[in-house]
Image (cartoon, rainbow, N blue to C red):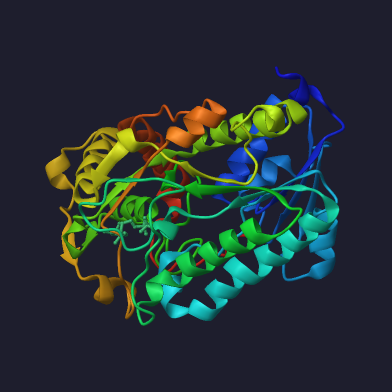
Length: 367
Ligand code: UDP
């Protein structure tokens, strides 16, 4: 273990520690380091098993509360994962989505600039915007960031996230790193609509829900858009590569061009690129294997229009392929998990977790 991971005097604040990525990060920090964690979230159901851990302190709060923001910024490393990131809300609740993804992280950034904490802010690969089907690799410091018209409220989330990135990058005295996740997937992702959440979650949770319920998988506008899916466990490994570089002391800053500070990083797996229709095909096949049934007995996919499915203002990125050269060059990190492995792992978890609660309308709260 690296010496900085053995340092029990380090406390990391994780905002959004009860969420999909936060819960995996928390488990990994406790398993791989001697650090303490100050965890903030509104919902802790994914981390029940950690609530009594003596190395953790948890607070039920959000960043709307200035005193909480000040408290978080007292810790030397602050990871901000908190966000409204349910796609159907980008159209239905654009003002709330913008406030949560800009106002709150900006106030945390101000507090970290004042206290000297290292802020690791989770942004989104949606900042690359309305990419076309023939878009090539998306490169952090080169690719133009272009959104659709203001009436396409799908971009409310991406616009707020990008504004936060620009705000962070513009703050004097802030030690920062921005992370742009490319479709992280894995156990505990999102929710099952009507069971522990409402609205339309991201595609993996939607397809998993439909499979468990014996309903057709919905391909938005034919499922021709492409995404590169990344295992959440690879994402956690990226965080450790980042921690290692950032906490290695001045040597990192002195190592010309190798500092992880003042950088935005794509975190993705370009080897895992598929169309959404291919994703549906793979998930249907894997589900049949898990359930030991003939794939033909599982309903086939159906096409639906984006506006019909998500509501007015929906728009899409047609291709989102990350360049991962920067993370490899500065941090020595490269995602490893092939798509079939992460899909099987996620779907196995989903089936086990939701099989007894799969009836639409059993609306139990998620917390
Ligand atoms: N999508 C789909 N069916 C669904 C959910 C999503 O075809 O049930 C499509 C969506 O239109 C987009 C892609 O899958 O083209 C990925 O959508 P997601 O909401 O997971 O995240 P995004 O990458 O767009 O942020």
